[in-house]
Length: 291
Image (cartoon, rainbow, N blue to C red; front, side):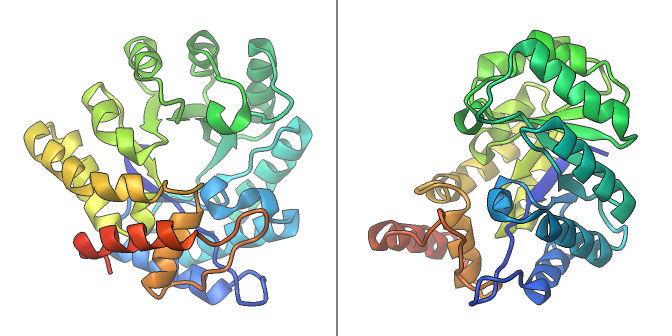
């Protein structure tokens, strides 16, 4: 189930800053029509830190309803408070999510033992497959491989979204992990190299705009056609770089606004791109025929 490309969905807002349900449903259909393997609502790309618990639940409900079982839905229900993560994960299961995405607790920077107890408590409390999200650049703390390997033995902990940027760490994890535990890239830029090392795919920002092309890249790699996968990687590399000219999800939301899917509305502290960076992004999108 957890291989290929899963889109880390943006969350569309109306011009007055409210959740745009119609735009979100349109995004879900666009993704599925273009062959995406799964959807990940309410992650960082979905501006989860600025959504209320009620809005988080609403986004998950809309995505699950609109998906209608056509692809898996991995709901972002993580928190740096274990009780809150358990509560939101229970809600996601009731709504019908396929799995949950659990970010490493941020700001409080737990020890390795704290990470282990946090994720195990959620996995024990809610019988739902879990994807752990390791992104030390945002959370302030890396989940080291010995801890991840212990967690991978839990029946409900099925994958990791690896965004440490540390290829050596990822390589060692893949070499030692259980066979049924998937390592997914959390960085579009590293999808090809991680898959060449044995990773199973990516939870992607870029696939908001190019789901079909990201599916082509990941499925070509899964088939072992490394020459073609490498070619596809380099074709998309300018996009991977452009959508991180500023903090995610600012550039990808700007991209989807330019494509007519959403209003270019963010919630503070996210704000619109600088003019210079937006011009550079637009040039790449035009070059790659994304607009």
